[in-house]
Image (tube, rainbow, N blue to C red; front, side, top):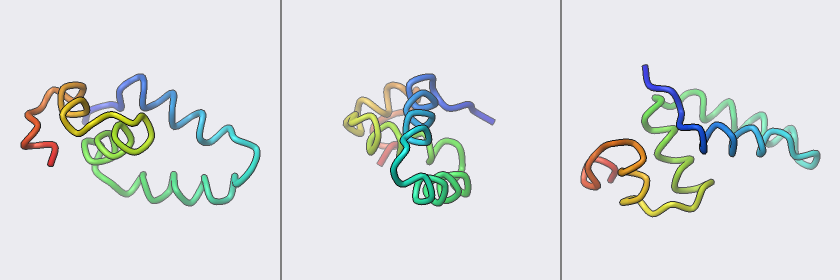
Length: 68
């Protein structure tokens, strides 16, 4: 099983550490936990880190077509 990249792990910890909306954050984390690791990483790289799908594909070591 692949681990989340360091950038994504740091971003997820920052999301969880926000004082406002902790309940919503827990629900988001629970939903993310249901995804396969590769899908979760791709989603977080694009949605949280703001990477393009091509950039996220490079970070994940896959082709841009596979990222779609």
